[in-house]
Image (tube, protein in one colour):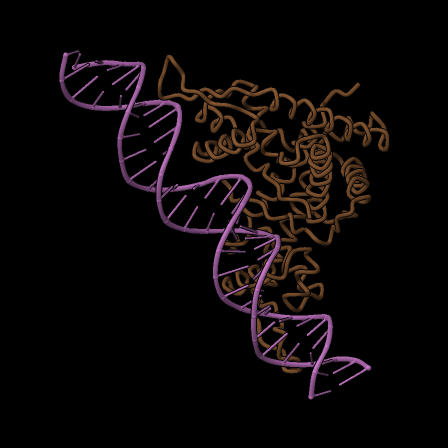
Length: 158
Length: 158
DNA sequence: TAATGTTGGTCAACCTGGTTGTCCAGGTCG
DNA sequence: CGACCTGGACAACCAGGTTGACCAACATTA
């Protein structure tokens, strides 16, 4: 017999995610990245991981190339990346991360880890590690590619 | 030292949520509710819990009343609720849940619980319960009202 | 080499689920 | 009565996706 309902579980998962991410976005804003959205972080990470063109990024993010192109446009606009046509293949536009972009994911990573560390204090290291293992099980058998958080958009803070 | 990064933790939480909800939506579709979105479920639940007008629902969901009105319009369109102006206060439009709407949350609840039960089998009842307790801690100290999942929208399955 | 196919990018239109901002009709209260 | 809430609706907008159509550039192969 369940102490909680499945619907509650969903809300708990989503709520935890929102808490974590909101905290990061909020903190990022105070550290000189006021216009950074979660999706920007994920996108820049994917680019750094090797997605050097729009189509590439699209595949890696699991979204259409049009969506990826929009994201890239936003990143360019905010100065996180630059693009220039590939000299070897003039169809491609190579993406390069700027120092500002590097700064964003560096700070982002740090803040994520800080928040996680706070959770660790509250929960205990072993417990948090186990929680992560358990979550990984749920995600692991997923048809969805975890490297593809197209669904990672999130909304603005209220 | 963390075996995982904070950013990974975020993805785990989001991924688990997505898995759970996608499953429910998918199953709901096969049971006669092909156009049901997660937000519909949450909204109907809120209505059932006492939100009998648009402004009411807005407050309960933590969104603007315009957003709530749009949601209600969608629910009406799909036949999950009906509205009629309050005889006592002709500004208000009282919301009533139809049988179809009741069916939706009944089935929805059942499916949520089924999926949770599967997770319980995989993890063990005690472990899942503990996981929920831990998550509740993260959510518990939140400024965000858990009864207000305005951020519960989610996207279409791909 | 020329024809055919594949790939990268872009434009345009649209959808969902939100947001402001403005406005008014209907109640409430002094 | 007039001065204020409050419920609802209209319009415009935004983010982050989606389809669909299309073209230019590279790749392949007869």
